Image (cartoon, rainbow, N blue to C red):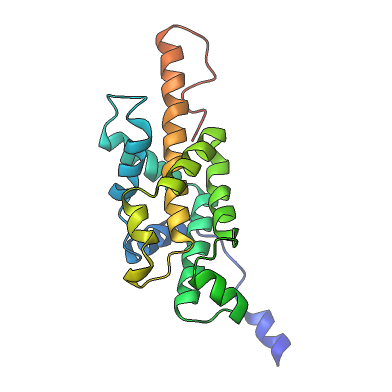
Amino acid sequence: MEMEQRKTKAPYSLNSKKVADATKAWLQKRGIKIEEIAELVMLLQKKYYPNLTMEECIHNVEQVLSKREVQNAVLTGIQLDILAEQELLIPELQDMISNDEGLYGVDEILAFSIVNVYGSIGFTNYGYVDKLKPGVLEKLNDKTLGPCNTFLDDIVGAVAASASSRIAHRKQTEREQEQGEETLGKDIVR
């Protein structure tokens, strides 16, 4: 009987729009607004680009969130936080994730999979916001508010750091083009 069920199961079908929509929806369900992530981007980049606008920051956050690798990390992290809230993890893992155990670094490793898409500037920016915990990260890191955000705080910081890196790379390309230098093109960092 089990073999018959396997044969009748529909084949796996990747639906990128569905995954992208789910990523945005789950961020929203977990209380995260794109604008809050963009505020972190502004904090990270305003010093270097005084004319940077919030619209540019939002656009770059959206571009980062449009990448499948990022969507996979976001959805995985949110799912693990939800499982921890529901106490559905094995006991040892449950304790570590529920308490955001300092020596449990898998949440940061998942965040690194996001910043890795955007290079070393992303890592530097991530380390800075992870230590400082400004804006929405302070709220996510507050254990008294209830929801488990062990993964989500690192994911949000990583998305902001990646958007910041994306801006830095694009601004460098713009400078080179303005100076008439040969460039690899304006779409180097997607």
